[in-house]
Image (cartoon, rainbow, N blue to C red; front, side):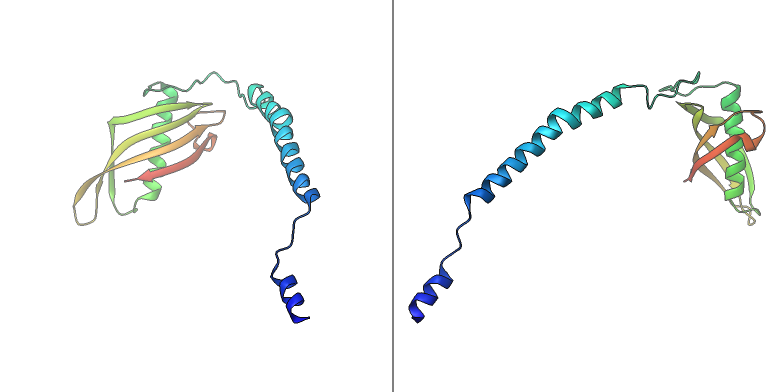
Length: 152
């Protein structure tokens, strides 16, 4: 009797053909749902105007200069001044500034600042600032959203 029990315990259980068919049917249904329903729906949404924001400000691949970009430089300089130690003397280099528009009145400003510390040591620091103009008086800093600053 011990021999029959040990043989039963060592034999692997056979899978039922119905469970294998269920897994295959589930996989086929999932593939069909993804291919025929989900993918066309996502493509339709992506091709629609749902995510389109129509503005007069179009992204440019090269640096630009206009009155709004000049204000972006000035406002980024204010943010840089707030980030650097108050006791240091700062001189912003205007000729070194470049501004790219990302569209929708968002700008990347790259420039440099001459920092003179209390000991009199001078160093040039580069910075990049991302800023967005909302609406209203462009000279008012409250009408600009500061999106990021990197000083290196």
